[in-house]
Length: 195
Image (cartoon, rainbow, N blue to C red; front, side, top):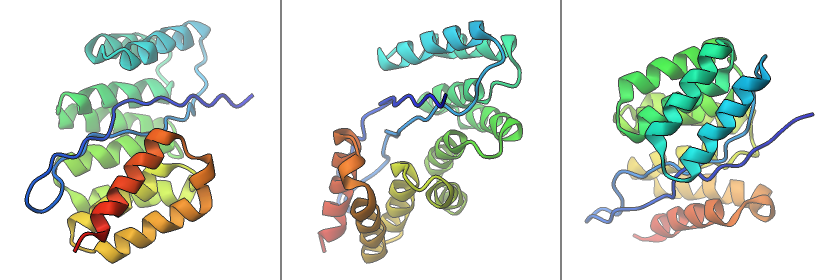
């Protein structure tokens, strides 16, 4: 049974400046990819997800750490530890856990999404673009690949190309997209429409 858990991890906030936007905070659709070998690791991770949803990011980290100690091949635990470090802007630690998650499961879109946001926050837009493009091409129904690619194009001043990416996503998946994600995509489209 494929279990999909959608978590709204952070709301996307735009901080206005003269150019439009500064550093966005990620909001993404989290898809549970790895099945832990241990039911206990799953339960502990569920506690971690609940803590994140309640805003207790630091406490969540320890739950995911414990899950990874119980099952060292549980790639979602590593992705979520990376997310906790991204939240605190500890980018090197975030990348360390993301690389471990990708090593365990190279087809894990969650790791690429979080890695894209981590690289974007570290101002490495070319590598971030590659991560988001990978998600867009291999997990095409996830909004995060499209959003990340469009956001980077927007940052680079390629507003019409960014708008095309947004329109492509909305044409395919608008009806299936939750309100929070749809709102962030439409906010970015609105910024792209400004001259």
